[in-house]
Image (cartoon, rainbow, N blue to C red):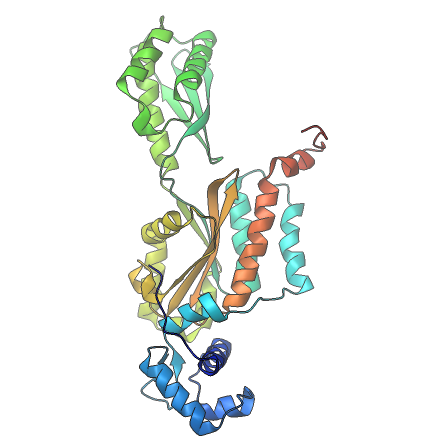
Amino acid sequence: MEERHEELSERKKLILKAIIDAHIADGEPVGSKYLMETKQIPCSSATIRNEMAELESMGYLEQPHTSAGRVPSERAFRFYVDTLVEHYAMTAREIFQINELLKEKMAELDHILLTASKVASNLTNYTAFAIKPRASCVTVRRFDAVYLDDNTLILVLVASNGQVKTKTVRLTDMPPLSPAITDQLALTLNEQLQNLTANEITLPIMMEMERAMVNRPELISVAVKVIYEAMNELDQGELKVSGMDRLLEYPEFSDPDRMKEVLGAIEQKDDILRMVSDGSGSGDVGVVIGSESAVKVMDRSALVYKPIVQNGRTVGAIGVLGPARMDYAKVLATLEGISGNVETLLSPEQKQLQDGSSPSRDE
């Protein structure tokens, strides 16, 4: 749920932004004297102190016990991301590193996303991750069946989000297979099960398929069981992490017990996968700060992710994990740039160019 903020005066916004920018840069508490001397706030030190006191009472600033300065709260970072963050102008070198993605001839979605996460980690200096999100309803756009021998075939499922799953099916106590029967099975599966979710594969549909497989109706129940298993596996989601050691560069993660908790959350992955999968439908950048997250160890941390969309479907996501005081402007610009390149790489036109052909002018 989006938090509602009181209307802040322009002076309060100016002071709050200066405090957050300074805290992002070095992680230290910020005092009024520092703002006067380095941020050129056009107010007296007393006025700045009064405004900081009001911002604290409104929940935007916190005062560490050991310092007279203030640090931004989670609420301040949320307001910063939603209202104050400025456009980050990427350097020529950063743009070059992102564009290098297009020079890779990569056919596997896994490989593309993992490479993209490594680029994100290198450019932002935060831990990055690549996700194949859970799908709310896995469907299959094509089935293939490959004859191996009289008792074995391979089922190949090409999901609508581009994922591919292969399953070896070994038949016991059944008449021998043949290439013709295997081809008929693939034809029947494509005619009856294309673009259906597992819940939509009903008994009447199975009975119709058995009638189509008039000579080998018993193959249908075996094949559907394997298809259920494969569709469930396609729906699990995957999480791969790049630059995990970069978290150690920030004081927020220097405590061994805290680092152990964060590593555990990443290893378990379920909460992160669920959070990204639930929020990826719109294709917009997601920013989750501290206690906004379902991941209990995310206090003083932030997670930013950008879904990768192909043909109107979310096929993956890339993101970064770091302290709540991360450089949001740079992170947002980096993820937007990388995701745009990945989506171009996944486009049919780009795949044709990689194969050495050119798209027709008539297409």
